[in-house]
Length: 538
Ligand code: GLC
Image 1 (cartoon, rainbow, N blue to C red):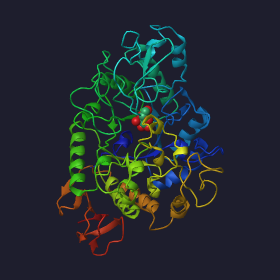
Image 2: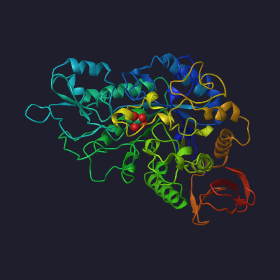
Image 3: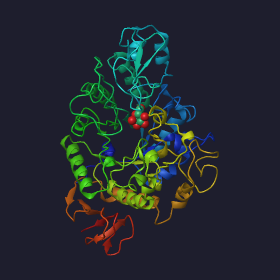
Image 4: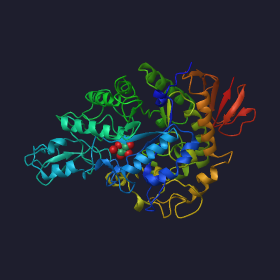
């Protein structure tokens, strides 16, 4: 029985993440933009994706890649104008591609008019009440109000000249908004409507678990990570507080006034708390980062897949699958490192000879056939369809991510997964644009260029194109999943008429009967190590 209607496209869609600054440069300034994106719509169309999610494209000084928004109703001049955005939305819709915008409600840029106003205003003034300003501790107030630390390293409080401190869970140029303030809430209602009225189909909500703080500001006693699932069930003074659900409901009520809209949460919370965000009057879905943190191991994959599907089913939400995004090491490289490597530190700490790039590439092909065949929706990060690896050895003088400085050079940060896309094998930025790109591309990107891969039956791009096409034909209508036991090193499951088998061990295993629809590498009677297949009718 088909459960596919126009209004639930997001339940099983393939969503392609566009990191706009690195996608395609249409205006020759070395950074990606909307003009470049419009020029490359064919690539997305031929990939067969259902939607694009565009990382923040708003006016911003780009201190944190656009997650520092100076004006939510304006497009960054480097990327284009609101009219360009509207034209893009229209063109995407004409190709049946939905457009998901990225909204950043936890903080603004320090260049936002509200923050400029707050700094120019008195302590206790309404302008300061839009943010979280407090007096410091100690006799002269010279100690921060609490020991909270920024996700990017260093203290989460910065002092202003009149002696008060403001909170920033991220960079000092990203002051946290005060969500206790009705004016802030009303402003975001209006921002949602602004973009919905321009045809946006959905929103990815940044740091969806961070907006509500314990206003007693108790000390936490240590550094707070966000980009990993280390959240507690015990209650934390600024992550995953119950108050966020009221905000979620308010936004959902706005979306429900329009047809066919969705919102997806970026919520790094304890897996047991995630379903709370997915109740029927809250988010439509949430990123599930569990698989991304799972080592290449059949048993562990199976456990995570089962748990994710069950948790989502409990609340009637679809599960989601993510292997890479703009915040983590690309999986083609992660899977080439020995299981258990602390990959955020590895670019600096090494051992660099531990990387087996060919193994990573081989596994990335198999991983594509896994995530594109699971029930729910799958997010594809730009460049993974080309098999791009992490550029872990970027010279430190080009690093742009605030993590590099804020971690006192102990973490290189996230630039290595944000290197511009190679579209063709030649030119100053491999077809990305007409000048050198804002982050340098390594030589090996030339061989991975989209134009080389397009039409090559053995390329990663062809594998993604084929998998996405076959997915819509065979794997969408029936959303059931039945795990199969084909051996300790084998991940196997049935999805309706298709059986998916992934050999995650190091020895070949027998191939089940049936017609092989798609294979991540050549199979010949047996299923080689690190290879996955889709089999029809076994
Ligand atoms: C999210 C984004 C990340 C950004 C942070 C602060 O985690 O994905 O890129 O730095 O929020 O907005």
